Image (tube, rainbow, N blue to C red):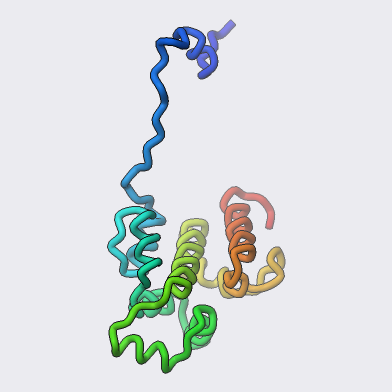
Amino acid sequence: MPSKTTAQSALKKQPYHEMKPFHFELQETESVQDAWISKLLLNKSKNRAQLMNSVRKGLPVSAFTRVQHKLGDEKIFKWLLTYIGASESTLFRMKQANRLFNPIQSDRLLRIARIQSLARDVFDDEKTAINWLTAQNRALGDTPLNLLDTETGTDEVERVLYRIEYGVYS
């Protein structure tokens, strides 16, 4: 009969009073997805805590430009402006004055970058990811981008992406 090598049998070999406590530490290294998001948003954050602080302070207009450029055409530009709650003239003035987006607008840009990054990882191709994000999806009942205006919609888009990644019919 093969010997058990489970964690439970390993714990039985050591008396409880001799066990060392387990310490969970947050790692300072960023994942590939986090690195891509930081690069896309032109943000020098080294970890999620720093990225969160950057969002709270506000992201630059250049982050909007990068996200829009990755997503594509003029139609996406108009959608993205509406999504973050800014007009074209406001965006132009912000760029001229070198102002930052407010935290809510910055969070929305981060949300799009995060979903865009996840889709890119799932499909292993940026163009395929963008096509998927902008096409009607039966499982979602809309285009994935149109659902990113709420946290619930974003969760649904993530759920479908993970189902695709793990081969579950969606």
